[in-house]
Length: 304
Image 1 (spheres, rainbow, N blue to C red):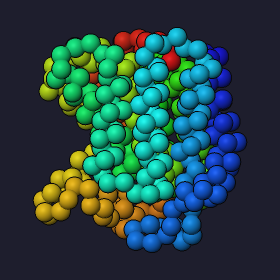
Image 2: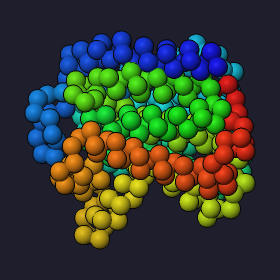
Image 3: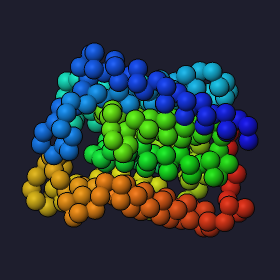
Image 4: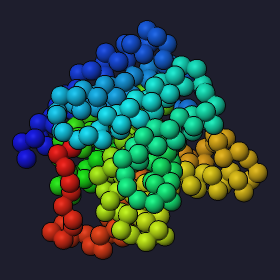
């Protein structure tokens, strides 16, 4: 228990204290977001939140000494995702190029897994999908961090330890600077990183258990565990395709924009989408385990 508390507090303090420094670095190197178009902010905003998340994640992994042999592969993938997103924040990259790097990072995460190729391919696509989906949902103060925090809380409830608690604390610490009045944004590096970490960590530490499910059932489980980001992305792809537009074309059809345009205040949008997200995650857990009674859930493995 003390390890969980220590990890959560360490992540929280890192997020609270380091984010102002990353904001200054972002302004100095012009990693900023300019107002205009679909954006709601009226002034130039630093994209420094992602650097705080990535640095905290790496440092915890280096000093926590979890003993997990697969962790270097996951951290390499996370670093690829973050750096590609950070470069994209400075000089926009094509969606296809970003997707290639996301698939490479996801490939590193599934490399240690056993099982048939179709199972690995499904996990790879889901991790890459989560990586992109969390970026797509990052259009409102505090939304992406809040959804990620809900995700990282699930393994803690199931008995997970260090890394999950540290990530939850990091999200809470950076959230202070992003909600309700944003003083920094996550940037693509931060939002992509959160999606990758959720997908890759869950697959690495629940992949063997999930592999026991029939393929169609597993696809439903993964869709639900992707939560609001995956739901919103799937809806966006379908909506744009039916209109004959590119699936990558930006618009105001995302769930958070629709709620805002419908008159729901920003805090209410975050609360509503977090509630929907928790419901989807709960549905995924129920479909995976056949129960929501914690005493009957399979123990969560590992010290991470």
